[in-house]
Length: 561
Image (cartoon, rainbow, N blue to C red; front, side, top):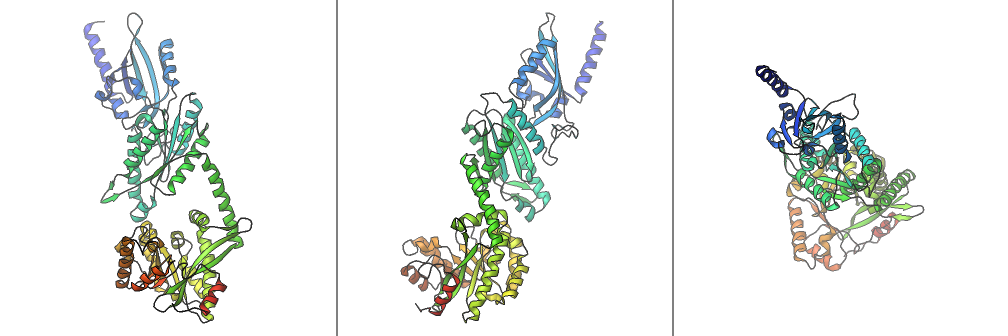
């Protein structure tokens, strides 16, 4: 060929190389990358200098089974070419699906001189959309693989797993994410999700795949695990990364993750149980939030017990297998019983009495607290009105949960209950905890204010054990502060407890609030509280929780202290 023609052909090839939409990778006979085109940079995010000199295997996603590269190499040696589907690893660690055609360029002696690979992937390089191919299903918001595609890939990874290969599955749930949408907007929530997706991708890199399961849940599979400590380090790194402040417009969000971990083949040998076990661990982590929990076989037993108890609780609510007990509150100024706290007990037909510590969390989690709470309200108010008719006008305190406050038409329910029982609203006191105001402050305050207009009273329960801040006391329509028994227990010996109790009583008095001290068990505790002008006390020194008939006997025979 004439030199001028050869030069023209070289210029032509260069033009094609530089302007192809596809990514082109040229590697030497050892697989070391020598050249890439702009199409490759556009698709993967790698600049040429970031990959030249590295082995082309570094671009291969961890989604492929270990034998994948060996099969491709054998085909190239045998036929001089290979084509098929592949996942490349982008610069930010995401798997980029596409098709590749690889060819061997041989020297004059017939030995491989170069390997040329032409990769066709998504036009935007990060979030490919292939409506007709089930392998290419991506979440449109984050660009991560969605639940369906992730599950299909997980099945494939588990199936092709080699005998000595260990994989780890992490399921991640953003704690209290709904607060972002409630407090701000769904647009803010979307931006938070996208930032978290980016951070997850950066943490995992080429070690595995991150997917969005939907809502505020993500998944991550690590395909080449050396040991459990390595996985725990990765999980803690992810948790730390997500906990850093997220800035969206003029807002700052501080998020936390609950992470459940399971291992293949130790915990599961198929994709379904792999996911199920990680999910069980994740829900265990969510019980306290902001933590990592590894699956344990014993959790299966606990889950079965949990489900059994949930089903039995539904039946118990339908059959009304509950009784109410009432713990008296002694007024330290009037020297008589002026109120009671309502306590619900479940009498199981076979197991006997089941502790509230067992069934109340399940009721909260499942929403059964709403019908159970309605039953408690109706029966408690009816009972209180019977005492009023007997000549004893005492207040009745009923515990209220967040779900009751925000679901089930609580305001209409209380109006109906008060009308049905004829109980004066001022005798109904609803006890709420500090955590309610952290989760949904505006909605909670609005609901409380409407009930306050009806003359229903409010008590802040377990004051000092949670998120106590003075701004809450200033904003909330409260009547009573209830001091937690943990402070009362040490009040006669611990100067810190003394300072907390005494200052709380003083603060409450200046705010026009009453104070009820819980867990009073000794006369020494009672004497101190009386000296500090505490309003009321309750505890075993006054009385244990009693059935309604015994309360009436106590009221009739109340003695002054």
